[in-house]
Image 1 (cartoon, one colour):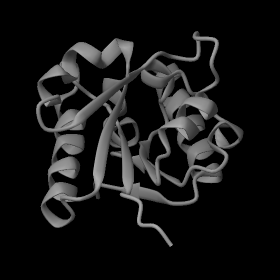
Image 2: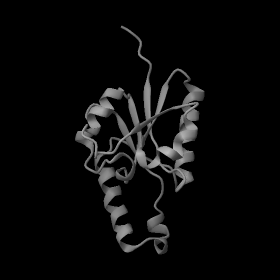
Image 3: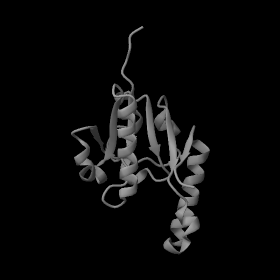
Length: 155
């Protein structure tokens, strides 16, 4: 049996528009490196966020992936990267990776987990339009229905 280095794909979220998401991913990458430096960590980043993630490159490979507008399906791109685990897929992957629920068939053979960072739209509804509240509720329900695991990082 040959040993193969584990490969974790972290989906770039946040950036200049949402530093909380960007810091969450950066801290995850640093935590993985501190407990398992032999594990390969790649940041998957669609073109909309690529510029925001350039400063990560000296420490972590940034795999800039085009959105679904490209001719190659996401599933093939993910399988070719040979990720052992992909995280976090959120209720809004379309703006960055071009993924829209249902996503299971696009991730066949890839272990993954979802992430719900918060429920601000429920606790602070005055900050969101009715349409945005409805969209988040629908997308979070779709994520919860499909994800093998869901991480909640806020109370």
